[in-house]
Image (tube, rainbow, N blue to C red; front, side):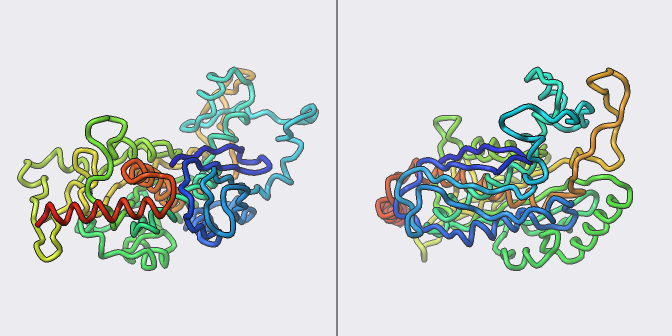
Length: 391
């Protein structure tokens, strides 16, 4: 299962196409819209969120609420298109008073994109490199999430830090059964630690006052995974590779850790690797700990998947940094777009979708992709074989 997207931040709309979707999968338009709303929410979001109220329009691939085995096409319309029609028109001549974007923002794709594509207007770059283009990713991910949910796999995320405000050091992420999506969604910053949440909000308030921006860290959890999904023999099939690559495809992601992550490099092996146990009552292998974050050798262990990502601060600043004017080659202030102060909670929702696609694709590689009935039968047979081995 894979997706493609098209569209610009201020264009008519954002399009997603999902391929290799098995037939017979029940799809909820309402749930996709819930996830789109979650992507728009969060403390520190900017003025654009007051304009857009994202909803999905499914154009193909679904009939009477179930997939039919063909590509699923979706559209998320841009309400702000009405204010940008002359400046973003696909055809015709540009307006005489068109203001080109010639003061690229440090930290954004503006300058290097303009150099790469030989344009003198950074608008051509920033429209597509905008975080707004993650909306169709979230819509597309609704297909992968429904697929995994139908197989008993649950995905959620929570924020672990914004700026210098972080969750307590004893956060038991190695036992993610403690947290529930309902508990997380009650927080404005999507953090289950109430004390840390208030500290994060104070950090955002300070950044607003200083006309600055903030990044942070978040964690994605996947529960209900079967062991042995993924691959070890082919580098591109290792889930550490596919999930890591998917997360790094999100704008502003600068680091990814699985389980204990970088801390594992500072400890001896006896304190890192997870002892293997046999649960005879359930006839299944398990682990005494989950320092690996649910992956070994690029494959799922059956323990919860735990992956943490770091997001840099948003490049658009209300008190801009120094740049160079591409017309005059003189010192200038970077351009300002309507932007967020902090989008870490929203980025975590996008990351859930990216992880969902990577895992859904791995499941389909192992158990088939034609239709849900055959996939479920293959999974049932696989579970029976695992139970036989563990006996």
